[in-house]
Image 1 (tube, rainbow, N blue to C red):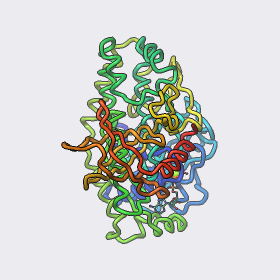
Image 2: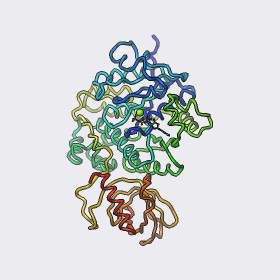
Image 3: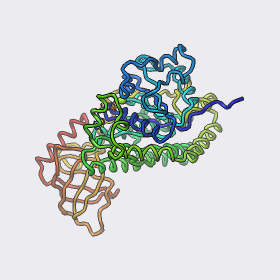
Length: 471
Ligand SMILES: Nc1ncnc2c1ncn2[C@@H]1O[C@H](COP(=O)(O)OP(=O)(O)OP(=O)(O)O)[C@@H](O)[C@H]1O
Ligand SMILES: [Mg+2]
């Protein structure tokens, strides 16, 4: 008997916030992959407002994923529509098909199982906006995860939050039904794995669990190593905008414990915008020499060349580790497509959908004692650039009030002196510009404490951040 077809690799493009260019990047990356010779199928997994087909000038798709799910067409292969690009097909989304809000478990399972059987080298999933669990599950079903970020604070925060919730969903899956999950709940509240979780530093709770359930921590570590996520920047105004992406990259590695790389970045480009209106991807129409076309061409090559065997090996190890535990025997068979992506019906700890208001809001700590009495400090994670001693440093602002701020990620240079003057700039913030500061101290934890030179400017910044944090 002929071996059934299997999709070669699965890429997913996500990013949390709407309008950052996920569909645009998916589309043009898909074109670049097809141009590089791969047989590509794209899936519009945007459950709320599917519109990927319009990127190709298709206004009303003849067939959508709904035709497959409802059984009107026999195979998913038949609903994969040709595009003007050779080797590239698209499975159009349908509003209300996967359920405008939530597909049933069965339809997700049916879809995920069948996607794996497509005769394609690459399946590329545009997962759509938001962080609801269907979106996250599609993202997690991939071998390679790309998260699109625009170098602006809200997009960076959303991108971070998106990765965090995707990663935590997998960690949660790994601990379902274990006593350790009770301990986690006790320590971090029942929202331990959710977006508003205070469990922001992955290494901290690994340490907590290491003595008691080393095998679970070992599984967690496999998941971190296997996560395979990368950042794709979009709408950069100038080369220095990359710094904001690097800052968030460092923050992701530091806090979530996963290695991410900035694998490509596209400029803010009027031609790109026009290509959307014309219904013709710019990777088709723009010349080969266009820097953005080149950037995507390189990314496509790199993705096609990526050796997934180490990742798949880790995944096997993980699945094996899971099998030694008496949790839910039906769980394993459902991991066949990618590692995850399917909500298990018998999950003992269903994950609540994060409320819109919970998304990517900087956390405000109510317990924080007022070290400086000007106003209560706000806790946040904001990429910043600090200039002093003639050098420029990227770090994260983690606490602030009108008097000063606590900055992590910057090691004070040898021979530093309290009172050194410099400037601070919030990355992506066009409003406040350079803010004068003096270096005040180094915290025992290595964080820099800075003071603001001009109280009035500091007050404005703090007021703005306070408003954003909803405090
Ligand atoms: N690099 C760019 N330069 C200029 N405009 C861009 C660029 N990238 C995206 N855009 C513009 O932003 C719009 C939104 O992009 P796109 O639809 O890809 O976002 P999205 O993240 O998929 O949004 P949603 O979450 O709503 O699906 C596009 O229609 C395009 O006009
Ligand atoms: Mg989109």
